[in-house]
Image 1 (tube, rainbow, N blue to C red):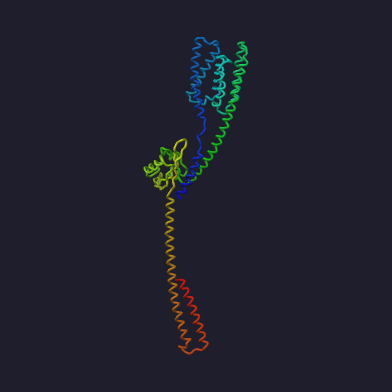
Image 2 (cartoon, rainbow, N blue to C red):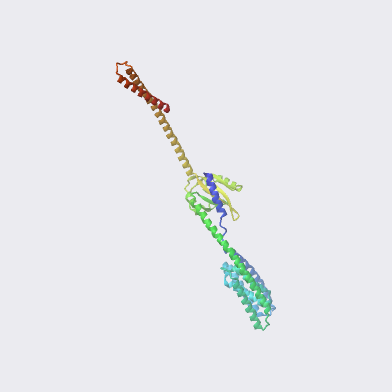
Length: 412
């Protein structure tokens, strides 16, 4: 029976392992990436600030007005980044203010560096792709692309009109087409990412549902189930474990598995054997919180989660098995006593039957002899009619004697 229970537990355990839930998908990795990007951007802004200040001081820039605006944007963006890092409120990087600061910085840098001929226009597509990472909710790459194109065209055309410059329409159109193409590509990339996320979400929900079912099954098992790691620290239990040890699950989690057994040294030796084996069955004595010693079979199975080794252990309470064995032995003993009494009664019945049969034979023989004497007129003269009656009686006694003889043979 114990082997059958072990087999059922292994099947259930294998189901639990193969259907385990993956790591929770949260926004924490995105925040880390954003923080890294902002740290790199902060370093580049400081370099740009040094270059602009040096160039501004030696009057190497022809458009001092735009340089001053560019310098102010960089300083303000640097202050904003330092405030966010100081407060450790990294989600503020996903604020629209940060987006518009990036947009304004890129636009002013394009104006300062050759306008429509500036290579820094390539930062607009980077801003569109960055929206996939920075957006709190659903990213909108086409809207970001449209805002970038409008801002670029409005700024460049405004400068052309202000400075009475010839329109370089071809270059501006080519730059707009490049930004639009990157936005369309980013849109299709977003749809692909969203499809993967939806599939991952459905898979996660199915696995959560499966885990809930398995957890309910494990909780319904009337045996303690414990999960512990390589350092023998308990990480999870089922609901029956608290009842078995008369302890809260919160008190059990965090304890060493050895502390639940009477002979912790023996348990340690068996657990060391799991380094070369995948499972082990330990005959041990568990200790409840009240100090009660409970004989158990502790079945331990190794499994891996997130490339770390864990142990799945279940305790089979042997007290019930002992009670059933005692009842079985008692019933067997009572059965033997009853069989002995029945055998004794049969023997008595047989002896009594033989004794009575012998007495009846004696009485019949006596009557038959008397009737013979009467029929042969040795006890006096009798009539023919009386003689016939005596012969009939003798014949009846002989038949009765034969039947009793047959029954005696059957009984014996």
